[in-house]
Image 1 (cartoon, rainbow, N blue to C red):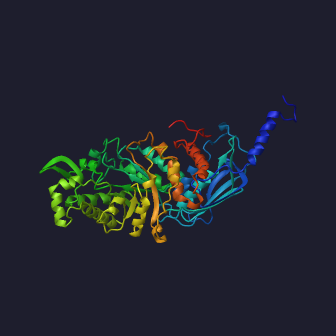
Image 2: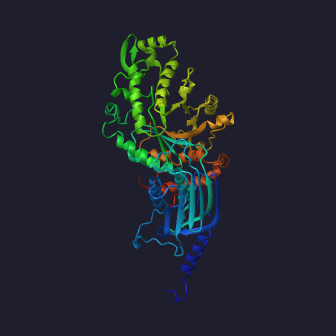
Image 3: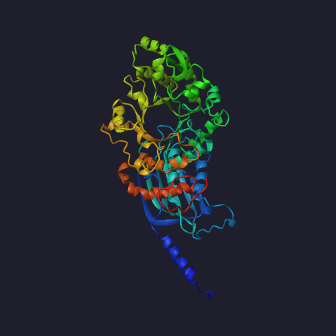
Length: 534
C-alpha cells in the first residue's frame, strides 16, 4: 500500500496516459467530407449532464419545430450512446467539463413541410470552447449540420467524450443523392426500410427511391385497387405495405430530410399487376389463338389509361414528393408482336412495325397524366433511347453498363435532366465491386458544355432484390453506399484519392456499427464499438 501523500507507480502510468490522450491530435473526421473543414488540436471535454441543444435567438425555427425537436433527442442518443441518467451507470467524465451548448439557427421556417428538389441543405458549423454554432437556411441544412457535429465527437480509452475546435462550411455537390430499394423480388419488412433510412441520413443521402412493385409481387396496398396486393403480393396480409406503413416510411424519411420517390414501373415488369387487374396485360398469341400467357401492359385499349390515371391520382395523394418514377425499361415486344389487336392498332397509328413507337406512345400518355397532377416523371434511359422519343419533359435515369458517360452527354445535349445510376449498382458482390469501385466514379467526366453538366442533378445507388432480403441488406449496402454518398456530396477535387479516403471510411464504418448498422468490414481487425448481433 502506498504511503499517504504518495502515488503508486500504476497511478502515475494512468496519469501519464491521461495527459497524452488529452493533448492528442484530432482523431475523428466527417463523412462525407465537407466542402471546407478546418480542425485544430485544441479540444474540449463534453459531459452528457452538461450538454444541450438550443435554438439560436435569431432562428426563424423555434421550440415546437417537429423536425429539429426530434433531431435534438435523436442526436443526443447518438452522441452519448452509453449515457443513462443516475449515478448507477458507472460512467465517469472529466471533472473539469463545462456546460456545452449547440445553438441552431435556421433562416427560414418550414418545419412542417417536406424536403424537395430545390431544398437548401447548406450549413455552417463553428465549434469552440463551450459552444457550437450551427447556421443554415432550412431545417434540412440543420439536419446535415447536426450529423456532421455528431461525427466530430469521439471518446478516449476511458469513455470520456471530446471534440476539437472546428470550422465547417458545407453544401452538397448534387441535389439528388438517392438509394433504390427493390421490395418486390424480396419483401423487405418495415424495420429494414426504416433502418436503411437512418443509415442514409448518416451518409447524407437524401432520396429514397422506392421500387415498390415489379413482376414477382405487388406489395403496395392500394386504396383504389385493393386486389392488386390481395392477389399480386406474396401474401395479402404478411407481405404488404399498408397505407399506414407507407405513411410511416414517408414521415420517418421526412424527419431525416429524405425524400420518398415511388416507382410504379410499366408497361413492362407488370406481371404481378395482372393478377389483380383483369384485362390490363396484353394477351400473348400462339398463331391465331391466345397462348394463355400475358406480356406487358396493353397500350392499345382505353381501359389501360383509365386504370393508370386512377392509380397515379392515388400516388399523388399518398406520396408528397414532386417526382414519381414511371420506369419504362426492359420491355419485351414479343407478346405485342404476337397479338393481332396490337398489330391492328399499330397500323392505325402509322407505327408500322416499330414497337418502340408504341411504347413511346404509352409512356408519353402516362407522363402527360403525371404532368397534369403537377408531378415530374423520372424514367429509365430506355425511354430516351427510343427512336421515337416522347415529347413530354422528363428526367432520365441512366442505368445501362457500357459508355454511360456517352449516354449522359446525349441526354443533356437534348436538354433533359439526368440521374446517374449505372456505376452504382450495389447488388453486385465484393471483391470485384468493392467500395473503391464506386468511389472513383466521375459523374461529370463527359464532354459537354457547362450548361449540359448543370443538367446532371445527381446519382443513386441501386440495391436490386434478386439475392437480397432483410438478412443481408445492410452489409450489402454499407459501407459501399457511403463511397457513392461522398462522391455525390463532396468536392471531387478534394476526394480523388481512394487511399486517402480509406482511413476515414474505415472510421465511419466503425461509427455505423456503433449506431447499430450492420456494415460489412473493410479490413482485418476490429472496431472499438462492435455489434455482433443483428
